[in-house]
Length: 562
Image 1 (cartoon, rainbow, N blue to C red):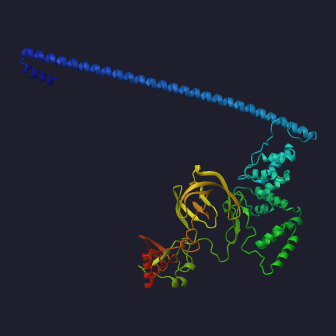
Image 2 (cartoon, helix red, strand yellow):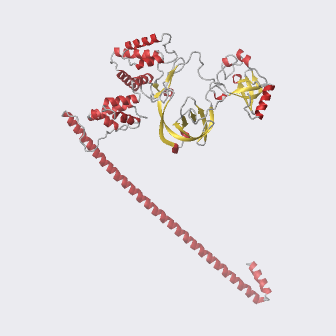
Image 3 (cartoon, rainbow, N blue to C red):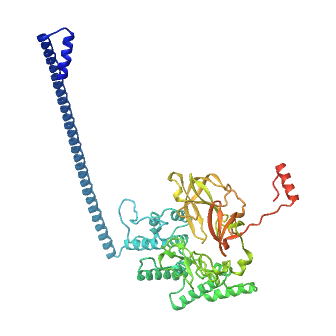
């Protein structure tokens, strides 16, 4: 206020005003300024009031919208509950109708049986058995056929129509088999059942293998295990055609023992003739022995008589392997449907692999055995090195050589398998859109036939680059397995020999830690190696003639002389 007074006093004096005129001028200007400030305050107050009113209206509108949205959601939920209620009522009515029909059908069948009649339903619609479809990847064909026969007998179906009713429950290769044999002859139930059992290896030999290799599953009671064993034995004896007597079982077991004790060639020779008793079997074997007088007919002792068994893997917890026994190596989980084999430990062979905790009985060091100790006479004569000398370092024990490549843009391991005739890729590296919808059947190492889906993957490797159709495998030994395909290249390299040690180097010896341990410089990284992983590096000396010939070859762009 004092500043305004002084300001207007100075301006009034500049205008030539004095005394009362000057005082009146100053007061008039102050009143004008006071009125202007009052108008500004009123305008600001009005603006704030309008803004607050607009914000209130917005909040009310927002609350109204939310209220309307909640109302609509509530109405939708009520409508959905009403629809669900109606559906439940309809399903309940249908279930009651089906139950009534089932009761009527049951009463009709009981009445017909009491009258001595066995007939089929007189319903006008097409008949379809009310049983689940057969899945060859999950179901056991023997158990499925047993359930079908039990159901068909209980319902009083005409046995002549059983093949037709069963066809409605088949799919895949089982349906293809039915189609192939139904067009050649008038199909009976016994013929169809026999073909299906042979198709899925439910034969005399198949049940024998499964009986010999059966193992208790994890969590299975031994009463249930006994039931499974009894069923497999009964099916084996039933399909073998022997009488269920002591003499018949004795003949069966003697035939099995003879077949499993002789060589594979003789066993095949005897099996091909399908001899009915052990006397005829021995007579045919004697003729074979006379025709091969200088041939050993006894099977090797380290081969078990159950070498082609069907059983479970060691993970079931009932493995009989261990020290002094032959352990079973299963192939396809613990379901009893995979293939595996019993293999004994060869005499004199060391069990397992070298561990860091293994102690040498010669030098007392760890990480090696006595036959690999550098303190022994053999190693002392073959290896010794000093600081600053150069040595070669082994990559490890002989084994599979894996290359590095890319599969669908992902880096992975690649195995070149010369004993394989197809290609396989790991399932985790395949996209869903790369499956072709086709399948391929392959015979595995144990002779078991498996079916794999096919997919086209993009491969970049030393053996092949491009799009390749592969079998999709869940857990292969490598991310990609390349067999003998026309488009796959063969690379002849020394380090691809699986039976040879692979050596790298030369590397410089930095320190002799002990008579059996050396510290090696691996391109800037120091690491201690046992002498069984080292050998001396011998530099080749070129003669003058070879050196001149090599220079001439390089100048003429010829292959160098090695």
